[in-house]
Image (cartoon, rainbow, N blue to C red; front, side, top):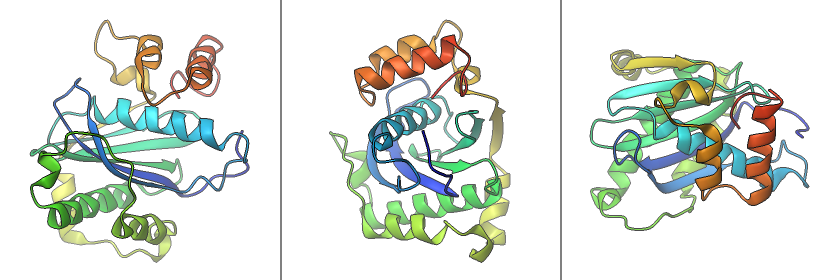
Length: 207
């Protein structure tokens, strides 16, 4: 399915409409070059599904790390109290504190560049602005990134929830199968992959 793991696969910024409500994608950046050509499209869909499911089950003013088990990928979600939110997908070896530092800075810069425009967006967009692409490239090599003490301190003040898989994030009565069927991020082929992987306990119980 995948030729090799990258340190950082994607960053997605959303407008958070409240826990359990559908979030609106504002901007995104991804690098799927580690995936084979014929599986790249499906991989992107599965990752987007995982990102959205994670951010929509993260409360405002909190952060979540989900250990999916899917090819060792991890989703890190950070939601500000004003509803601006971001998710990054990394491999399990990627430093968690740097992932959240990056998300914090991404949200800061998104707010600076868009002002209040992000609050008025009516439709999802999948544009990749230059500054977000720069973050994706810069944070590919975490050893070369300086830690910002002030940022890390503010992040530490946010409650962190750790989960073994996406199902652990779901509210009582929610089922991953139902979310997959209703998802606009997944094609029919990708939906079947989610359901089949869950039934056979492959990859994980999620993506």
